[in-house]
Length: 601
Image 1 (cartoon, rainbow, N blue to C red):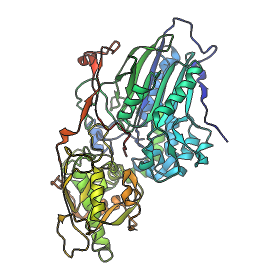
Image 2 (cartoon, rainbow, N blue to C red):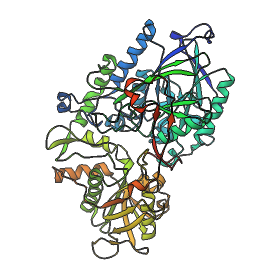
Image 3 (spheres, rainbow, N blue to C red):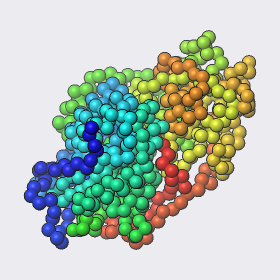
Image 4 (cartoon, rainbow, N blue to C red):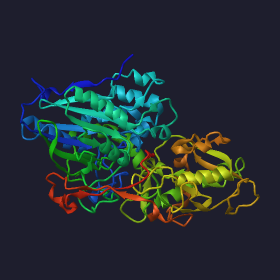
């Protein structure tokens, strides 16, 4: 049986002879990193959907693996020629799920494209488990790079426990210097993925153990690479001694050295890098690079002989159309293009309005309204005789993956657009419950409400009206809730009654207790043969052009009352770059007091 031990990987082209530099030497390192690439193998629109001809002509296409490959190859070419420092390229998880490319080709295309980028290490993301354990094992096995996760408990999952390419940590040698990299994955994957037997340890003790092992091996440059969200990344940086850097993912956090950017929809949530002061005054840097291949994280570092950072500066690279695409990987994209173009270019409807995913985890959004309404509409149309009393539909905000907008009014909606929005393959279920359970689910919808690292369980609804008050304690935030009951004999919104019966449509993922909805697991259900995507495509065929608005079915009061904390660090930014000087050697990151590791889908 394989024991997950620290592995030593040597990059032959950049290391030979002794692995310890002479005393007094400094060590320069360029770190490039991505997270949450979500199957954006091809370039995307500004909102990370399908890049249309109109988008290309407007200069509004971004990212894609060929652009990532160009940046990585150019940096490595410079390092090899001596014109630039050694390069460490890292992937912080969630390569899976998000486009038709993955929907069709699954782990095989993910492994092919990640291997083409030749990362030095890859952490697992929660979406790597979207196809259950059987869907992630071949991905790990077929990657040329080591896959990292220190906090998995795999006693009941021998296929992962015995997988030779899955490590807790590794040591890489660059320019004769040892660099330790430790992986981690959010324990909330237990709620975010289809049910499986993988268990999770808290990230911090698991990372501490690996740090201790590496320090005993005289590894003094230590990086945590993982997928738990920005709030947890900050806690890791604050609590794990001897770490130098945390490279994270999961929350799609956009860090930027200015108050704003002309790009949309991203909004800066803090400086890049964000600095966290440990109890002894030591500074640990934390970075993420948004998502969907739109940016490449870039850090220029200088270490002293003891492995301490003496200089740290950088900024994410916007991978717009000014960045060339690597011809070799572009040829691989083109190999699949015929099949993908058929899907991505298939018109399924039109819209008069921007279909906005931003905020769907926090409040009512027009995209959530459209999806929930379409679920009810399709069921009433297709199965009215079988399910005449189904009057409620919900879809969680975390299931809605991206916005849709293209040039022109009305603009065309394609099948590819909607696969990007709704990439999951499970079907819908009709779940029967009483009013008590229904209210419990609504309370859960806002139990972890926060604007930073917002979680995925917020319900978008049809057939209900809800008023939440965030000034009230968790568990009593629903101040008014109306729904259409299933056995009342008429279709009318009325106050939810504890003993009334309600039939609610939802993704099977939620019916199985996903996103923390454990109150649904044992309830009577009927599993359907279709999902939200099928429902939406039918709706668009009937009602295009759509003009879906936010209509007040959900109201969230007192958002500002959710307690926020400023984490400040004074006077510790070493040689800030010009764009960051506005922080005057301090930084802020707004986080809620919910420092438990809540979920993102």
